[in-house]
Image 1 (cartoon, rainbow, N blue to C red):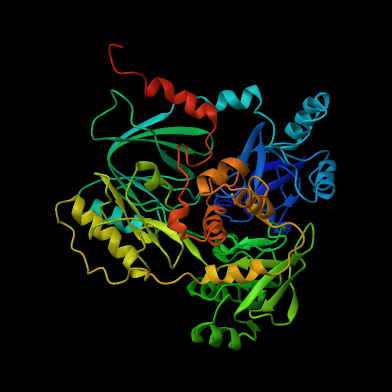
Image 2: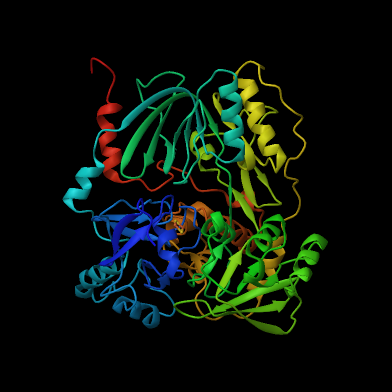
Length: 554
Ligand code: FES
């Protein structure tokens, strides 16, 4: 029965209801994991992948506004939601014929140069094929261009996870009332602090005549509200996320990150799958086994499986495949099995499943630090850059602090790092415990894994960048043609230029290029992170104009 407070909206013309606290995606997965998108070049079916507002698998059109993330959007009464990027429908998309016709990829750089008269036609087809959705309707664009809500605060905290909340609570106790910006739609209030939920944050570039010693950020919240934040100090508690993985058909619907599996099953919701193969062996994999129980049908790991996970899996009767390569996924509109192979050329095995959960590697959300120009250091163990921080979490940028897993603090240290920064900001008035657990560094297990995987003969599509449908073969060809370094390869192939801003493709891209170029990942470089690091409607940026306009008298 529908609760009286449930919100009624339509999805592709059919009436649906979202219960209090349910996102659009929560409401849709009650009928199973939906295929909501088509990929931008080959129109391959895509479904939600990350569940945390970072990929492109759940984009829909709401009331004439394109590219709204279903996993972050709380539907309102009367919303009209439709899918996009498919013709005539998401289930049967004629443009998917390009996936079959162009098995080796569409060469959008050199294609159809000759005969010259065919080039304009080729461009028209490619434009029709590419991209995400159609421009917004006039009405929806107008709704987006309202003036931003301007907030001037002493301390802004980006992220309301464990460390962000610990920092906020300690600050409130010391008499400082922070503003918290959190991407989740469902975020509990914190007495003494202002919490803006479903809100992303990005630094605006410093401008001539702008306020001295103050950060300006554009926060963008649902539904359609720009927020201009001016803060003297910013604490970034942006957390970490589960990475993607390269194998054949790695973009199939039903392949989910551990984040997505946890998000979709929060508050006791049943998972939208019955038999999931879990790839990974660390703490994250253990958390998933505990949460999902008999919905996990096998555990595959690139290396050895630690005894704690072995005993949890044995108790639950889950078969284990340690030291194995994940070679390929089968199934077109939904994954139906995966092929794995013991490392060292063992015999391949096919595992039937209706989901594959990736929980092998957690990466820091470091975009804000890059964007602010903070000094970063490479940690080989995770294969990612972290901000260089002092004991109290101060970065190299005055006024910017890093805490929690984005700063390599782990477990209890996440809370400790939040309290520590609050103490530093309030002149030592918050008592702090010693910071005892920081993520240890070590060799990267995935590098050897990829070396072995990529030596084997390959077939099918390997998607290096799912947002832009860039194939692994295109990246390899660029390297063979002499393009070196990630920035150059990005410009040539489009790798890392999609809506996720490289969160999912760059970490693997760095490892691949490091292997292909025969030099360490740190020499392969990194791409420049420019604002906005989260997709933000142009109308919201344009509406900022008056609020950040030129200084008085000009
Ligand atoms: S599933 Fe919503 S953005 Fe990834």
